[in-house]
Amino acid sequence: MLRNINKDPFIFTREKEDIKLKTEVYALSQSISMSAHKARRVLDQILGRSYRETLTILELMPYRACYPIFKLIYSAAANAKHNMGLNEEYLVITKATANEGTTVKKLKPRARGRSYAIKRPTCHITIVLKDTALYEKYVVENSIRCLKKTGWIYKKKSTDITCHNMYSSGGVWDKK
Image 1 (tube, rainbow, N blue to C red):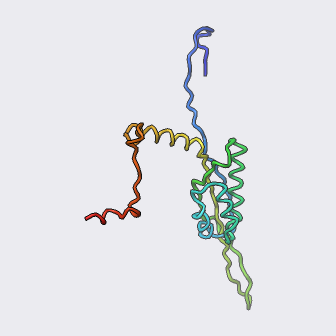
Image 2: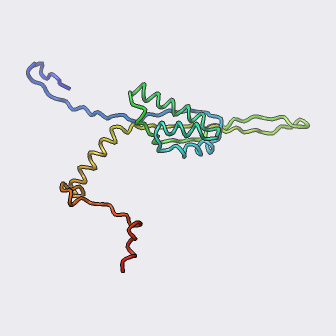
Image 3: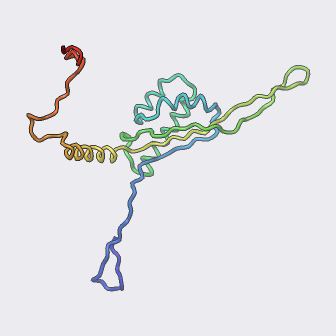
């Protein structure tokens, strides 16, 4: 950003701006009427997967917790697309938590004027999606640069490193 100092039109300085790319988007759903343990059973299956893969897994799983989680992931992806302009192809689930909420307590009438307590647990689910498009480019560039520095990538084809399969060649123990 250019700023005019001392009101002189010929003297400009460049001010550094720290631009942090925000690539994480989250969605939060509160007071879902199911136990946190049952929600965590589904969340553990989808953690670390891509957005599209997660939607197909949730459609095919037989648990009741899948539908609210499906809606929440769809909402988080819509937030990413609308608010930050991120592409849905590169979204990955980096964090998925289910915390216990309040317990809804009811009384069920029983015989002889008595009543039994019914406790309905609730939970709060948080899903965090991360855009990996910029991250993948950064990692590939840095890993190639690092391999060139250490000498793992050679320019000559005759000295390239080849991968030998230990199991098909007989392994180390065949040699006497």
